Length: 602
Image (tube, rainbow, N blue to C red; front, side, top):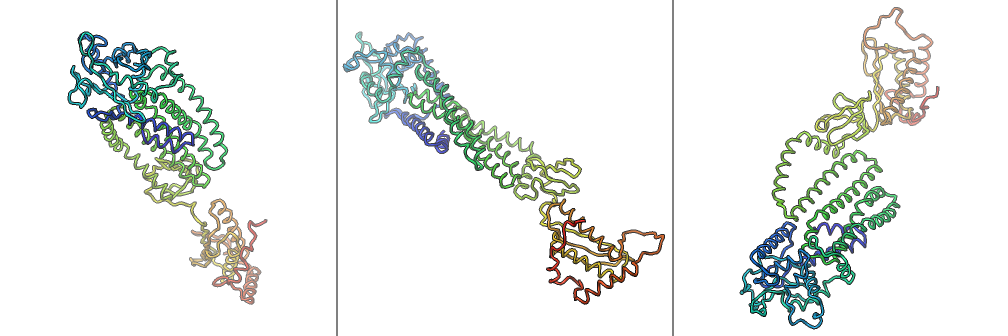
């Protein structure tokens, strides 16, 4: 339970930190109070609800056995009989019967006018806050324990720890008028009840409330304690709802990535934290008995709230991280964060359940062993699923693809729609969805077109064999075209007469287009293709193609006038020392750079 208190005190504001400190201090006092100031009685540990039920059953059985054996109220022959009868009287709400086991002789004047019933109530209240009866440590012999270092007529069965001293609680063997010896709570202990009550007792309002309400005990709590706890549980829910609403309004003023995450966190988790802290503060002020505290601590309420708090903090960070990734454009990690958060929630809930089961008295070792065997069986049955999960982790860490990328997997091309824990979803050009398991996708060759820094423009133009002057003119104008085009990266341009095949001249065009968008590339390629066709036709050449061509007319050649234009163009280049062979000069490239009109106006 300490980890819950630490987490609450760290994550709340000043009021919450103070409240958590109060609750923690109350528990520390409970731990200290279990120490019984006696050489015989060993230090008690915190008891689980199951152990308390066992002790209660033992006390009930002992009382029933005493009644069956002819036990008379107020006539306890052994220390054990006295304590069993005292406990049973308070269990059934009969303080008059409990007062029969108090030694009221030789009391100070301040107690002479106090009703024995009130004295018995006071003793029960202060004793129960720090002690639990343990019959195994109380003598069942009429003479009591003779080797405990105490006088023969005294038997210690507890102690009350005050701020300045520890007051032992004794039973004393006294002699009745008829000469019989009986055990009762020592008058030395009874006369110290006012001192104990002054420090550990409840307020005048609680005294009045306990007298107004019917006498009853529930789970070790008196009538006024039950009433105040119920009122706090009901009214506190509305109060904490109002407080969390105000805090949420203040938190809504944030405009950074925390805004949406804080809004979700402040709706429910914060309200539950405030609610439980309020109840703990009230419980710490009620002076509950060790039994009542053990019952409350053994309940799953605090663990449930601790789990909700952990879930809230986890969701707070998850929502913040998702918002941050969305702002950064790394949306592919969003799909991974959500399942990881689910796995962490399962681990937190399982751990809290095991901790509560251990505190409640269950055999946790058996539960853990069962979980281990079950985990192995689940792992074997979910082998393929685990492979896909590991594949997803590989895809998220290596990042070969991201949602929105256009890629090729095998013979499938498509846009990545989602990278899940099980599979990758691709949207093809035909608008169909292809789902590929992560284990296959992460181990195969993936070609990602979206990460290209540019797109290659590559052509092998086949021209029906033109004259050498025609080829020179065409190659020169091609080089000028690509040098002048603003969408062509100049250091990637390569234009060459690559080959001669039969009656065909093969011209190789290779350049990088300054875009990563496929549609934009198609527009640039279209513009280049149209200009290429224009250059070829302007120079009197025609395109060729694979296969055989059956010509019904004469082989087409450029006319004399067209050839004369080509020769004149080359002569101008020669005179100006501007022949583009083997390539354009650096000065010419610089002059032509981005001088072409794109897109071309028709």
